[in-house]
Image 1 (tube, rainbow, N blue to C red):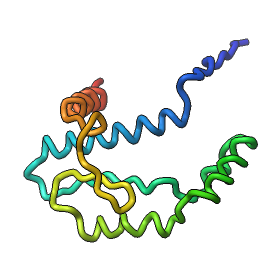
Image 2: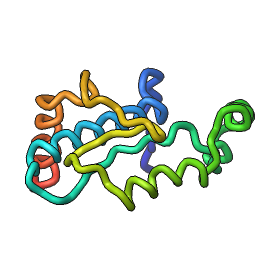
Image 3: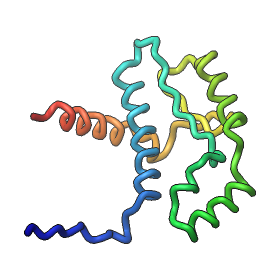
Image 4: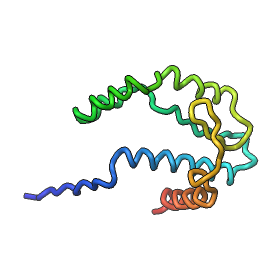
Length: 133
């Protein structure tokens, strides 16, 4: 009989932190795209709709599910309202290779979230990982 041992839970790292890190990685990859493809007609648009009322709370454990549903009721934007600015950006893309928006507000591409050296490092690491083996 083979004994199965699951990995211990790491309380410092979970789904929420992973989600936030994926947002940051996406922003950095947008910066890298603009740096490496300045002459392309393709536009990379980072769009954050904020909290959107979706079915996501249904997948959470019961206590967190109730809390998240209450939060969504008070603060979440409807899917229709969240998608409208995104559709506008797709129909009329900005002229720059990379732009970032939070709802309808264009964000300045400054600070660590948009650091070009970090962006290029992530791009090269990702490239190396996807082309290994």
